Length: 149
Image 1 (cartoon, helix red, strand yellow):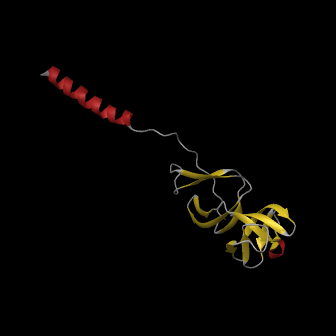
Image 2: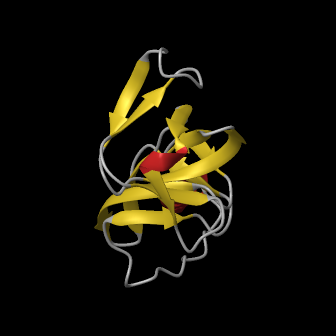
């Protein structure tokens, strides 16, 4: 009888420990410092970061963003910000934009057509709204090649 109780106790102990050691373990992630003054608007990325599928660092990373790029934050939830991001680029006339305080970043003055080529006859890719921030990539005469954030 004593032998049977010992076997049952050992089995229960083994099953309890097996469940504990079999759980998936992940490396702990340090909390990130979040600026409390971040809200909807355009921001320059200060250091390279990733864009994730959902508000969870364990979710699938869908894109890397380099330092210096412009992103548009549309909503903030806790430590995460929902962003609009695009890799589109095109040509605009320099008369349709103004410089900003940030080198290489320009702002649209009104509705601005983005062309596929640096000439008036090329097709419009998109029309940007007034106040949109763009990253200037290169200049060709009065035409500017910009990255649309």
